[in-house]
Length: 136
Image 1 (tube, rainbow, N blue to C red):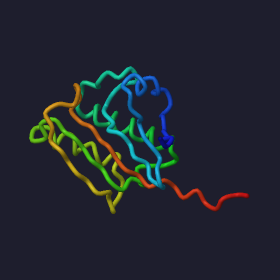
Image 2 (tube, one colour; image 1 turned 180 degrees about the vertical axis):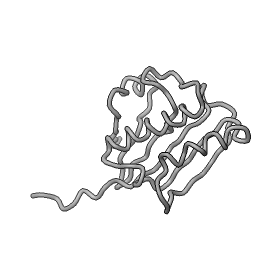
Image 3 (cartoon, rainbow, N blue to C red; image 1 turned 120 degrees about the vertical axis):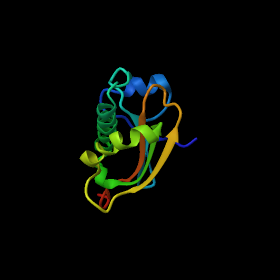
Image 4 (cartoon, rainbow, N blue to C red; image 1 turned 60 degrees about the vertical axis):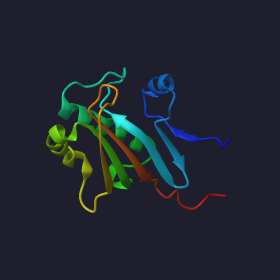
């Protein structure tokens, strides 16, 4: 089996190990980030929806930063929303705080019935920075 180049954000490795998945994997110049929710360091959900969305983006940005990226490097986004008909407007007024300027990444939105106690989840694929020429 090929070794995975896993990216762990500071202070959250135990949470990922307990749940048995990697927060992000570097592969072939890309960063594949697992779905991020508005969880506190202990894994508990933020109860306020707007704050939960902000915390999900902050958790995502911690992973991106650890890998040397920013949200500007994100090329593809998938969001999962519990009951999007009633929550979309609340969620989408927070998104511009993190989304940046156009051109924006591609987006797929998925309405779901359950997210393990959360109302919003975001997963992304980002382009890793060019490492530059190899030093020999």
